[in-house]
Image (spheres, rainbow, N blue to C red):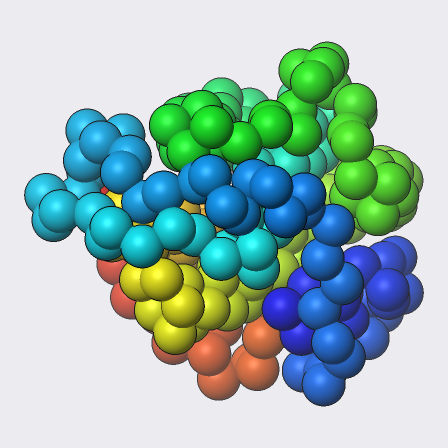
Amino acid sequence: MTTRNLLLACSITLLAGCGGSSSADTTTTANTAQAATATSTASSATTGSTDASASRPLTTDEINTLLFVREEEKMARDVYLSLYGKWEQQVFENIAMGSEQQHMDVMGSLISHYNLVDPVVDNTVGAFTDPQILALYQDLVMKGSFTLLDGLKVGGFIEEFDINDLQEAIDEAKAGSAPADVIQAYENLMCGSRNHLRAFVGQIEKNNVGYVAQVMPQASVDAIVSTSEEQCGQ
């Protein structure tokens, strides 16, 4: 996934304007045995999908993405919990425990149903299997700890990151084995990320500061934040 590779490579410098698209190749790490055994049969109750799941096995790339998104959602939760501990700004806790934890749980249920190995082996804040996600978590917490405004901008960055990454995950799945349940889960997560972006931008603008897009095109961010909160999964 091109956006993921670029963002993880840029890490903290992204917050100074490194974002954009890339033609970098995806680096995959999932065990190919998981690809052979994983099938698209997760229950619709897990994701809110009412469509039957595809019968084809997940591809290796789809498995890698599913595992990455699981830790990506944990990273968002953990960053927000860390920043809430620093600033006691309610938006961080609300999103961390009201949404990101649910997103983690949805991904965890899919991983379990597909008989994959869960990368989240330690639910402690700041514990990650993927060293790139760990480095990004550390960078984002550091950046968000300078001022409250910096913390809110980190929130905006994470949600832009997630929106881009999830859209690529959806495109990948549709072009691959087309698992309806996984696609629906990604769409629900992306809907949540748009709402989170609206929340962080709203808090930033309350400080009489205009929000400058960090990953996505400015026009795309403006189109999201200019519309009302969505009811996701409905």
